[in-house]
View 1 (cartoon, rainbow, N blue to C red):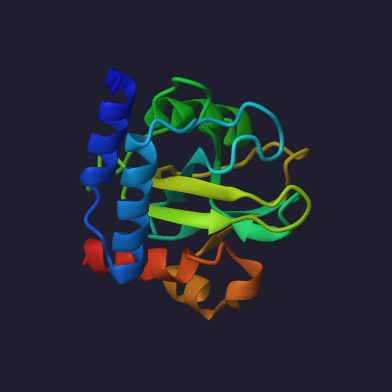
View 2 (tube, one colour; view 1 turned 90 degrees about the vertical axis):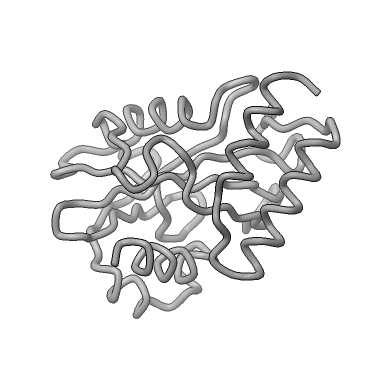
Length: 186
């Protein structure tokens, strides 16, 4: 197994699962990484299936989470994007944060530049595929600019507000993520 896959496996192994579903997603991701199957999207929207994604949830000083109205997905999501071939997932966070939100990626103290959560999710719409997503936590004072071609809007929501939103308009794992986050920040 190459060094890049070993590092990726260590990142996944470092995630403490919140529930049985996250444990199952982590186990499935580890099997996928170890299998030697392709990890990185090489052709839009779905080649190969599955492929690796880095999500990042930005938190402000009031403990609010930044969600973006993603034009293609038609959902309120954390920011993030596909990990490029041989790219480290944290490097993808740095790149996507600059491209999408025009701010530097600053990891929160709780996690540093390590993933906090992992999901394996079938996307919606044409070219449906599975995203294996590593979720990172960032901090920012404000986001006043964003990529309008990718996002229709951005909003800050308190964790309770996220949990009050219908899951149908969010990433299907957003409520679980938010509960894990609230528990970890106590």
